[in-house]
Length: 165
Image (tube, rainbow, N blue to C red; front, top):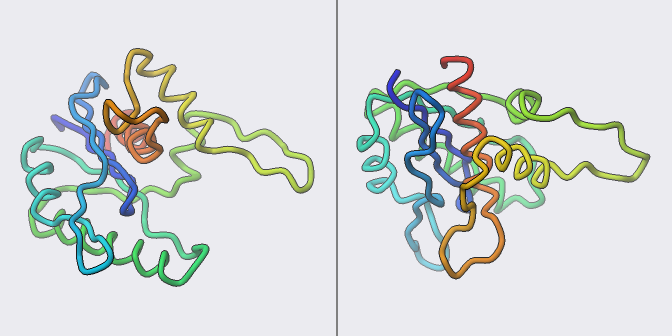
């Protein structure tokens, strides 16, 4: 497989493309368009990105079963449907991977005291910085904090590359 595309599903997700050697050749935030008062994944831009890096293998997380609210849950599943439809109609090979599976490859979750939560976003950024130390994870020149979606997408792609998915 020539390229590996990691996709962090969701309107604030990201897309990262790795070549066979594991170098990042493209990364971006999830392409979206305005739709009424909301947003949705830009179908045509998603298709353009996938086709630009074909042949490829795409790796993405399945839509989650839980969410802080019903609207967020519906949005996540709608985005997931768009992404999988673009991949299926384009005859692009893709693999679904649970977050726990790809995260386990890059860090060990420590035992936490009762009531404490492990910060997976910080762990992902730390792992990505070790793999690609010179990479800028901000979504634009004006942004100051790393974009979680691009970081996760890069690690998802690397997971797929290492397992030759």
